[in-house]
Picture 1 (spheres, rainbow, N blue to C red):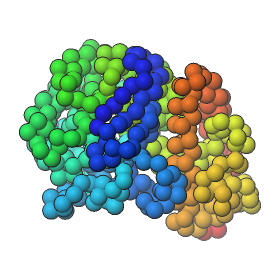
Picture 2: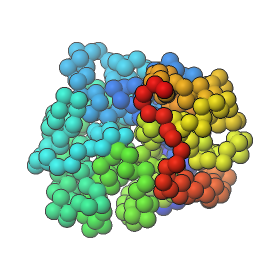
Picture 3: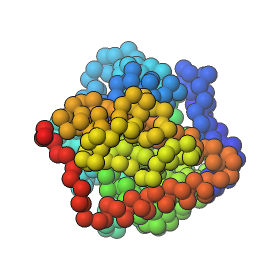
Picture 4: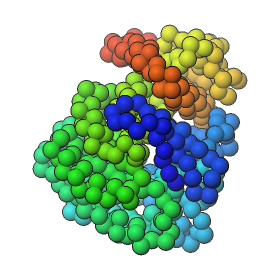
Length: 409
């Protein structure tokens, strides 16, 4: 697997492509792109068959280890890779550590180990046990083990330990990777730790970049502890850290970032030079019964950023989620019907919302790539900012409109 940048420039929005994918030589993925966030190898609420109705294009599946930890024993005996095991042979798989859509518990850190909070409780991973799991899963690309347990309130002591652990994990994991026959074709993503400390980021970068020739890309890690709180993380807080990290990274390598970033922040991160994101934001919206309705290219008829389909105003609304949207949910179902499904706790309700959100998010990234190519990304940013600012103002107001709860009415 190789990453090719259209123009080698630091700190600006850029177009690139992933080529020579393992076993899929005819597939090319354009960047900036969004990985499909999964839990247990499945996009939340959507089966692989339904996903094909949303998009037939090849995608990268983001597979958090925390959600597939219990697959390890079966994978040891399975003669194949993780994408075959989950029934998605045509997909490219990226193994990550934590689930960006769920809040990661803080603390419980030990030297040389990282805690992973699975459904069965806490599991401690060191470099050896982590790489054995990676070898069993045989993903197309994976993140090296790292200590990303830092956020805006982390102490200097915690940040320093996170950097020391990450640097040690990096060296130990690479040593195992070099001798692994199963992982020889895997693309390595190296995490950069350091919290919100420029000096600690510098120390981490100096150590990690010594092995740049063996690494295919870098993850800007340690900005948050995942979960819904990332949606409203001020861009002004993360901008200096992300900009500093990207300025120090090689221009020809992938730059990735994880989290439930809102569309406005995503555009700002793209303008700094980030290449890969994930759809955990779609899952987070769906869990609160919200659907994206901000216009992407002017063909949609919308004055809102998102709508909550549990609100009683949609009880007898027979419009699609977003007028002009061509997703399967909008073509066949109305807001009122989805409101009914949510009110009676039918499983189809979240399925339809997730279908729409994934479709809308994929179109959003297609628009970003077109805007970069046409040098008009700032216009898209301005449009999204108007809708997002209005949305932020609305949610700060006291809720006056009733919302259906989880009981039948």
